[in-house]
Length: 351
Image 1 (cartoon, rainbow, N blue to C red):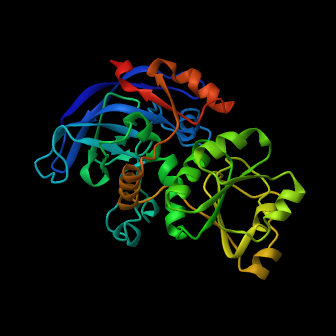
Image 2: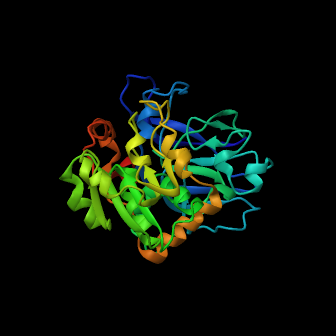
C-alpha cells in the first residue's frame, strides 16, 4: 500500500517527552477521507497512553483523538465528504461493522473491539494507529463527522471526547426539560455535562467538595451548587435527582450521591475505571430502585447528533489554545488540574 510521511508529535518511551517525529499515513483507499488537522484537543487519555499508565502502549506513540480539520483528499467511493469540507474525528477510526453493537450504531461497544484513533491497529498498514498530534489523518468516511460551520473550531475539538462522553449518558437516560440532573466534578468532562444537560432543558446541579467552583458552575449554566462535604446541603437534596453524571477520574465514595437519587434514578460513572471504595451500599439502591451504571464515549451517529445539537445551541468547550511545542508543559499542568477546562493544540504550530 502507498504511504506518505507526515510530521507529528509523539513519544518514544514511557519517561520520554513528546517531540517532533515523522510517521507514515496510508494514501486514501476507496472509502477513505484525508483531513488536514487544524486543531486537536488534549485529553487525559493522551497523557495516560503516552506514559503507559494503563499498560499496552505501543511506542512510538502519537496521541490525540479530538480532531478538527478540513478534507484534502477523498477516495473514489466516498459519498459523504468532498474536498474543502470541515470534518472531525473522535476516539475511533474503525470497528468490525458486523457485530450486533455496530449494527445498532454503538461502535464504541463493538464486540470485536473498535480501532482507537491512536494505539490501535490499522488494518490497512498492519501497524499501530497514530493520533491527531500530526499534520494529517486518513480515516474511513464512516468514522468522519461533519462540523457545523458556525462554531469556534478550536473549541469544537473537545466535543469529540469530553462532549460525547457526557452526551451519550444524558441521551441514553432520556434527559430533557423535566429532568433533574447533577454533575459530580467540574473539569473537562464536568463542564461539558453542565452545558449539555442545560442545553437539553434540564435543571442542573453541580456537586463540589469546596465552594471555590461555585461561580464557574453558575456561569456555565448550573442552577445550583451543592457542597458534598456539607451534611445539611446533602440532606436537602436527598431523593432529588433523576440522573447523576459522575466525572471524577479517581477512586472515590459514591454512596453519598446515591442517596440523592430519585426513585429509579441512575448514577453514571464516566470518569473512573476501577474498583469502588469504600464498598457500595446496596440498601438505598434496592429500596429505591436506584442504579449505578457506566458509559463510554458514543457511537458515530450519536456523536454526529451531538455536533448538530451543539451547532443549533451554540455550545462548545471552554478551552486554552496552545502551541504543539507546549504539549509537555500542558501535560504537567493537566496533572495539577491547571486548565480551564481543556487544552487544544493549534496544529499550524507544527508547520
